[in-house]
Amino acid sequence: MIEKFSIPVPPLTGKEPRTVYVYLPAAAKDPAARFPVLYMFDGHNVFFDEDAAFGKSWGMGKYLDRTGTPLIVAAVDCNHRKPFGRLIEYSPFAFEWEGLGKGVGQGTKYMNWLCNTLKPLIDERYPTLPGRETTFIAGSSMGGLMSLYAVTAYNHIFSRAAALSPAVWIVHGRMDTLIRKSVYRPDTGIYLDFGQREFGGNAAMRGAFWDTVDALKEKGIPIACRIVPNGDHNEATWEEQIPFFMPVLFYRRA
Image (cartoon, rainbow, N blue to C red; front, side, top):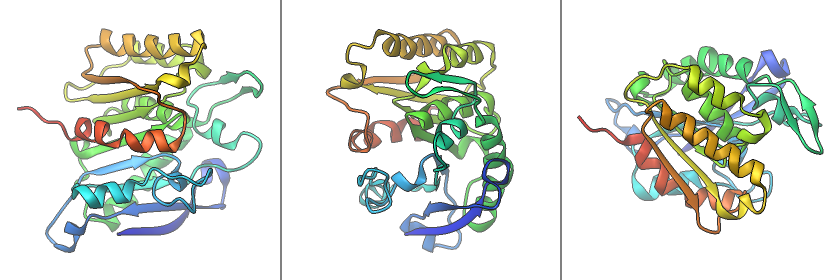
């Protein structure tokens, strides 16, 4: 079951309502059941093709129903304000992108809102397991960058992250610097991937991705890293990666 409700993000878009999509597993019918929570970016692209920006979603609800995964997913619509609302909201640092110019990232404001307003609301309304060990985050592209940022800067809240096609190149090494300066708890786990066709001949993009992977390796963070064969920068490719990143979120070894 997928519920929707509206909520503003006052630090960024004032009283303007955002849609929050919340997936509840069938097992939630048991009043005693409690579940881990996965927070996701670009909520409009997560569940329904008719809501997706380009007419194709991740189909996350269908996957979770089919596999019976015991998980709540809370996915928030992005900032659609033009020209660069989404880029500004989903960048934790100042950024520069050819053709788009420079911008001041507001990702920290967004994450503070998610952690201090949205998460308590989700924990109050739904049968969650609210602890760090059962709180995850995931996204793609700019949402992938934000997922890396969240599991790094807010490691006391998120234990696992899935960063698909993370747009680390637009922040020019700042993510790598933050990773190297940060302290991660031992049970942190991160999934990263990038589509083979996304790289193309862009050496800077490819280098930025591997620099980020190297920074995580230097910190000793358990990571699962993949180059997706013939993978593209779109929801169809990201949907195909759900079976690869979901086990990383749930992985436990005593």
